[in-house]
Image (cartoon, rainbow, N blue to C red):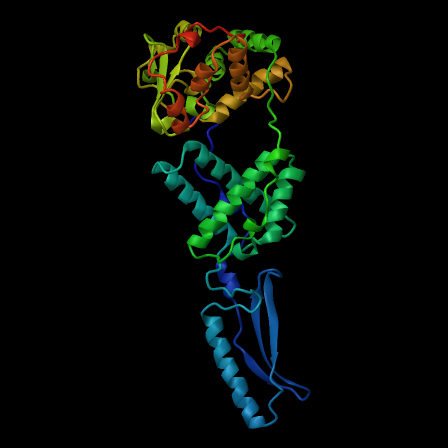
Length: 399
């Protein structure tokens, strides 16, 4: 496993939970013929109190002693059968289908792994689900009284989890919405599997998009030059990643999938196969000569052609990295230069696009380079680039 890669499994055994056998504990019902009142009495496990709790059912309505006793024993017979098959008087839904909360998270974690390995989930989706499962488990363990069973993941719990993320932990509104979306996905999966019948998270609204401001902002020219100089002196391979984001608008997740044979040095292009592209379409991107010359200078293409562009230490290698590697390199550089926290790694993409437009690169060339349009809209105005765009080959920005 490469450094900083997330573990493949979460340790669900750290969850404050209990055995499912506890919820099925009970004592057999008995008839109590007291002088003041007759009642049927038994004990059943209360998940909230975490102990057996007495349940009483009065049977005083029938005046005839014989008929009252017959009626009581018929109830005892029915209650006994229900308790044996899993019914619990302290749970509204009964215990049929009730499962441990931690078991559901563990099952979904295995499902997430399987969907990723089968190619149905992208790496970023797989990572996001992993970290949000981890946050959900972390939140539950932090509660004064953690929930034990899935049915306890009600509307109140879902809202409290979002407040924990947004208010207590200080994450952005965008991340809060992402956690809400994940909870809806998780609970819909539980419905499909027959564990629950409704999704309480569907009743919660996301923070409106118009109220969410992008945290990142454009990076000034002088700061861009500082970043380039620092990376050349301290983190040469990360500078290539910065170049690809600034000049090529190649997203971090796409960068982690690039292989050396995707580059055409003669044509100054990079072809991203459909399976590695966010838009799920094979796309050709122009790579400025400045970027290719830098890659040659740091001996990037001296490795086998099937190697990933970025592996351990951000050098080419036969094992891919995750986007967290790139983010951590950016954060290290940002701390060293004491940059504004709103200058994020992704700000390089916005800044590069703006700089190209300011340098009079045509809107059409920039649009294709940034791949902002859908395939349908792009085909209306111009077909996708098949060869390198001359305007971008010679473009030299501030980075």
